[in-house]
Length: 255
Length: 319
Image (cartoon, rainbow over all chains, first blue to last red; front, side, top):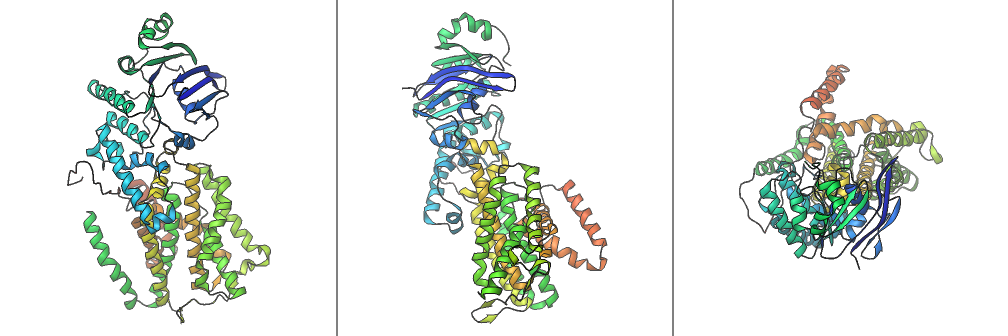
């Protein structure tokens, strides 16, 4: 049974058909990549899965439950976390507070608990701060925990977004161009990190323009063009698929 | 810097509580007004400062608390201070009902609707809804508050009642700020969509900020009614909402210290410059414009919170 099953997903904005009949499965423990030229509808697919947009047609099944029509925060609770293509950190808050945002959905204290500092609330805070520090250690940002998120370098901001997403304890992590804006050394580190995340039992679905990254870490690749799936397979199959070469690999659209 | 700040407050707070001993009743009463606006500012700060929602109708919640207290006190003779939680509850429930359908509105749209809510409440009070608000004349004959048999009457006595409540509020709100709820509101202010994508129920937390803010404004209304013994709709005009909003922006949105300073400046300065009469509003306006140009984050913007971290490497001195 697939962990995530996207079935004939369709979404249009006004007259523009952004996603048309897209179907693919992601199995537990996999690293799956979605590639395609700019404007192919990759990010729209992510926004549909995470509940930011509602599909016009089609079904999204996560862990055997339909998640179509659910609010984004409920989908996070079910175990799907994401990062954004354009980094969306809380840039005026500290690095640690950003990671704590992810832990929010696994905490329970409310207004009274906070005002009275009940023992349960204190314990919860301590635990989650420690967990957040561990996650910062995983992505290598523990020394920056009290920096403002906005003061980090571009590459580190991407890593912080991953730590924040991991703090929700997802079963599926969706990364939207995680290597965007990273230099070669940072990209190498990122590849290792994604491997580590998968080894922790988190399934990874990612969009990436850097073919080096995609071919190195993805076990399966889905190729989109003009909102439709044109190919699906292992990196080797995709690299030798004539339609893909024509649509994507042969051109120089990725900057 | 943090250390010095703490020391400063440890010295300043006891001195402040001794100040009424050397002031005449007029100036103590000015301090009492400042205290009430500090309470209102702190309560509105939950909405405007933490969650970043523009609310220009906060006087409505203040009015609900004041009128609830006044009506229950004058008709059923329940001691006014016992009505403090009732006033808070009434304002909180009112906020829940009013804010629920409008909470998804953004920025300026929400702002306009809250102005409308404030005006509806004021006009309803003038029109003597249900025949219990006393119309334009308001309600008079509210009993003086009593604590352990002592009647609170003079400005000096009210000073301690009001500022004790301010102190408790500051204490509780600091804790709220540094908690899961306070952080959630800050995430929403920073980036609503990212907050939602992190698993935060944005609409729910916006509503919480409105309800808790309104509850505190309602309790401030109770104290106001007890202090004045007469309340009328004109005490809850749009101008009051504007004052509360302005003192937050001037002092520093999202900063408790900033709001307190804002209350001193917005309410205190016009009293100090009373001789200038109408010209003082000119100064006031000019000062606000200058502030917005040169220091838009307010006089004392919020400082980043420090967390005690046990694991990981500590770099000692922080920047």
